[in-house]
Length: 95
Image 1 (tube, rainbow, N blue to C red):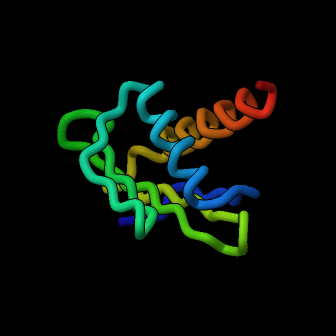
Image 2: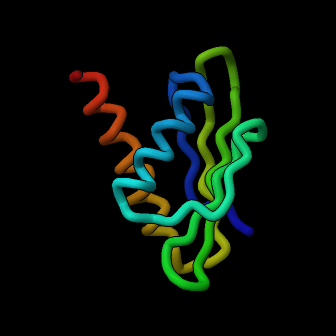
């Protein structure tokens, strides 16, 4: 399993997991597993194509979000997923 995209965010792991849940729901992507203690979210983008988002605390209120994909052809999807995460964060800042 390869890392397709990684971004850092100035937020706690708990907040980033909530943003990720909102993002997946907004994109109609199915959750297949969640381990909030480890910061792991498994999802299915289409039949037989799964991925994992891992959120790790780097510093207090700083996280690293990593998209691990099973399919190498899904790199564009990882970029789009993080763009949507960024969009949701930007919208929530305006509220």
